[in-house]
Length: 310
View 1 (cartoon, helix red, strand yellow):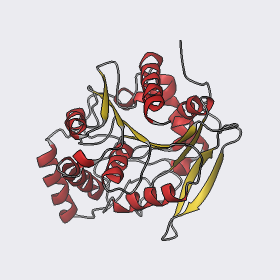
View 2: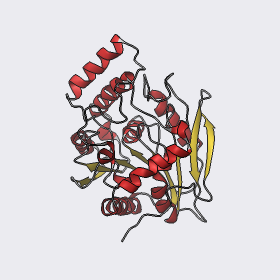
View 3: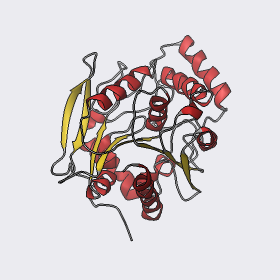
View 4: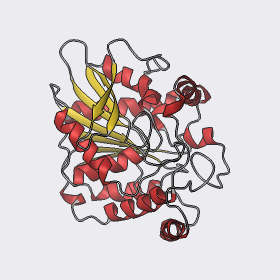
């Protein structure tokens, strides 16, 4: 039986898309969908590098039907939240700290009833865990979906970081690190890197056709260098074992974009953590996978929230 809602290619009735101003005046595109009636609680879901919240409408509908208020926003520099590079196709960042500051500010301003839960996919998973460790947010529970706690680099993370730093010195750090969207030298096509479900994969192209301005391409060399350095620093952070927020970590062991082994190592350092593993049946976007995988993931998340977000 499929848990998923059919809502995938339209903004649901009752939801709103607005522009929220960060402390420095940067406009952030935001999605808010209040629960119908008395809320079960509230979920803030953050996507990955290059993501837009439209990709997760089907999953948002699942949680909304269960009584949750659901919110999300595009990270600055991507989606509808402007760009950090002169080239609008390049995902650029010289420092990830502004993203943590944006997340903390939204969290402070998010006045909703019931227990509040935070979730992050891929880069969003890294930023959510970093925000938790830095005590920038204080949710009742957290869920990390295929979190970017290490990068799946063809040359390994140590050499990958060295190469990225060198390329920043040899040219414009804001230039694209490669031509494609996700990963250089990939043997699989982009769909198979993300999901085994062609229909769900096509949802992304649908939204980009409707709103071309929200599409992003490859990362910059500076983003890549900061991603290597940031994930390395987080794994070594002595505050990880003191981060007591109940956390669920969903890992796709065959993930070709992030380092699943790093996520598993970090999960063992968390004092209150539950890990759910997927094998070759799942690519990177677990919540946009084929129904059998996606349904298992959603059911496990629901059970976790029932236990830790009352």
